[in-house]
Image 1: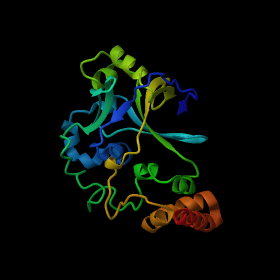
Image 2: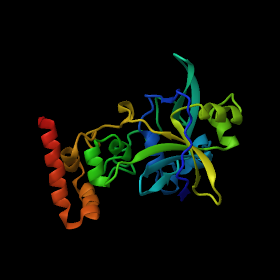
Image 3: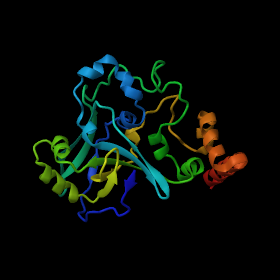
Length: 261
């Protein structure tokens, strides 16, 4: 995957907001899809494709780190809408499964990831969105870099018409170019030639984090290590070799000192 290093940033003061009732399966619908989307069973052949499959991607990126791009579940819809604001109107982004309403989820995804037959049930690891919201101390210890998550949507006439009904692709393109929170890159992702993508950084919002006894919110290095010991140790060994325990102990010590102040 190749991506240009120069991001085009607009100058308008307005930004795109996110609906806070969108639950964390917006992330899961990109990052935790079984091969061939087996979680949908035979029904997948009769399901209408969500518009996200036409060019919406999830981008994991950090300086001096190879970008990782995730494709969405075929049922995911991505849409923009206008809502009132103090300056007139602003754009709001909505992620939603295309086969259900916002109060329901497919039975195969309903208790994700805690359901016993869920495809993620036996994976003792925090989800990437949980880590994205964690303290910099934890993220730098485990990943050795602070990463960012973006929604990337292709500057494609067909897709732009689908994500913002009622407007032409050119009108959608103009509205996006006026938003301060939207950048643009030229990249090659699963394609033979470069394409332009709009980038929208994913916010760190409390309301869209899935929390349970098995998958709690990450509060600190020590707490996360106690929850996902084997998973975190494998990352630390990869980064620090035989000195991984020293790195972990130091991070926990520094975390404790900061809380005492």
